[in-house]
Length: 140
Image 1: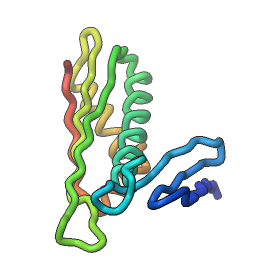
Image 2: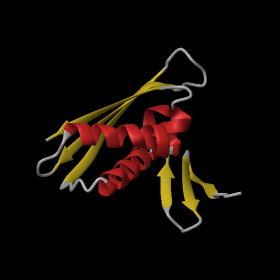
Image 3: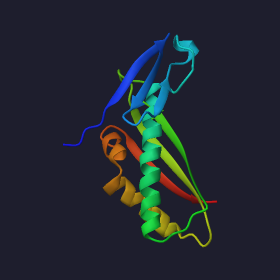
Image 4: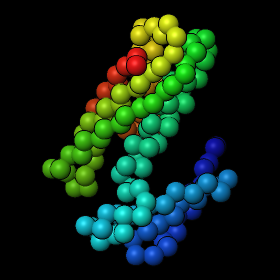
């Protein structure tokens, strides 16, 4: 069984630092208006970061296999929280994929996104259990 370990340590006030087995670090905090210092990501946006990283890597891998050359891939991720639930969860997450490159095919880009969402991205599989996920491919 594969395992992953994250250590999460309180630093000061409401700041926590997460460290993985390779020593990568992420600082988390809450906004000053909520009692923190705003010195890092709030925990819920970290979930959107994970989705963006997972989908981005998987889309790029699929496009590499399809021999689709890119000069740019950026994502805008919008998470809509359900204010009527406690704890609050995302009810809808939208990712706009912005692609640049020569002679890009929207059909191939959309196919890569669909494969990443349905077959490869673990984070998407988890978040889709509670949130509506919407993806859009945009050629810039």
